[in-house]
Every structure is written in C-alpha cells, then in structure tokens.
Image (tube, rainbow, N blue to C red):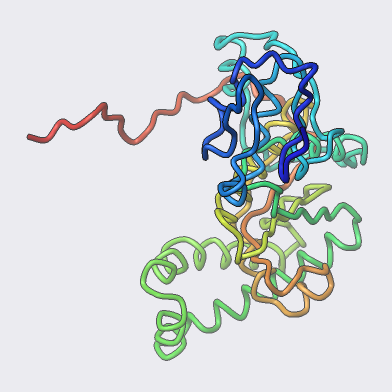
Length: 298
C-alpha cells in the first residue's frame, strides 16, 4: 500500500499498531489490520521518524527521510554510574599542547554533534571550523581590534548611552559587568606579548550558526555544541565554550563574508578545542541553583 507520506509493506507488517501509537500527531491510523496515512493529517507530520524506528519488522518507510538515514542501534553498554563518571571528567580547558587536532577527530566530533535533538528535522545548525594557524591568528587580531572599539565606546558617557539604547538593559549589564573587564585585560596581555585570552591558543575553533527563521534554532545550536563538547572529551580532547567570539562574528560584515555565513543565519555559540596541556586529577562538585517537585506554594 503506497500512501502520500508512508510506504507500508503489507507482507512484513504484523498489524501491531506500534507506529500508530507512537506517532505524536496522529498521522497514521489502522485500516483493518494494516496501518495507513491519515490523508487529511499528512501535513502535520514532523518527520521525526519514530514510526519507522519502532517497527519490529521494518515494514514501514517514510518518504520524507531516505531509507539509508535509518540505522540500527545497539543497547547501551554502560549504566548511570559510568555515564556520570564520564560527565564528571569534563573540565573547561584553556591551556593546550602545541599539537593540531586531526581532521579525522573533527569528523568524529561532527558525526556525534549531528545526533543532537532538534526542534524539527532536518538540522538547521551549521558549523564553521577554523583550524589553520594563519586563520586563527587573523581571527584573534580581529577580536582584539573589535573589543578595542567597544572599550573606547564604554570609556565615555555618550558612548555608553548609545550602547545601552542599542543593546537593551540585559545585554548592556553583561557588557558592563563582565565583557569590559575581561576585554581590557585580554587586550592588554595581547598588546604586551601576544597572549591569547580569547581563544587561549587553541588549535581549533568551532563556530555554530543557524537560520534565524527556523523553529527552535537557538536551542538546537546550543545542543549541537554541547554534543560536540562531549564527543571531544571522549577523544581525549579539551574544550571550552567561548562567548566572546559569536557576537563579533555575528555583527561583522567582514567575518560573515569571509566565512560564508548566510545572511539569514545567526551566530550563536563557539567551542575551542585541543589536546589539554595538563591532566586534571580532581573534579569539582556542581549543584543546580534549585530543584522543586510539583507546586510547593499554597
């Protein structure tokens, strides 16, 4: 039976209705003992693929997702304790060995990053990788010069007023309370002896950007970055999420053109990575700001 959206193999189908039950938008229904697309609900399909993934006999195909994109998964080979120990081993790394990150490792990181959850398939997150020494030097100098301009504007009342009007109270507060102090020290160190406080001399930088007109594009990009960070850890690499890079790339016509960032894409986050210079032998316990079950106010 061939529907507009789904292809059902009536010979292989057991008629168990799993695909009907798992569909989050009721796009599939049982017609006798065989499932079928609900024609007037076909446009509600979000191409999550769950109907295909739960079918025990592989009797179902989704026309919006190529068959080769579905892969068998194995049962987890670890439990919570091993998973938690892996997470506890993660540290923000800002000192790296003078050693490049192999492209094959970057490919593995990107492969893992692509498994991140997304609001609606397909992924809208794009990744820019900078790992050439000359390009890293160019970006560093650009960052220094950009923040020189910001510091100059902050040095007088009129400049601060225009920044506040342009950015709003929340971003202005972040600039005043965090960015100005950091950039002042970073630029002083760079002018003195070329010390890199922005990318910390990392041999590779990943910059994540996404189409601003797509659903959940911000959350998706941050999840992709997070998956990339954990994948790098599994390869013995160190990482730190850097907030000083994205706003500069986002606002710079020069950098956007140089790196081919589409005009509708917003630069959201960045990750530095490389081989850690030192081994961390202890971790730090971290707790959430608060946890609440159900409603406690009466």
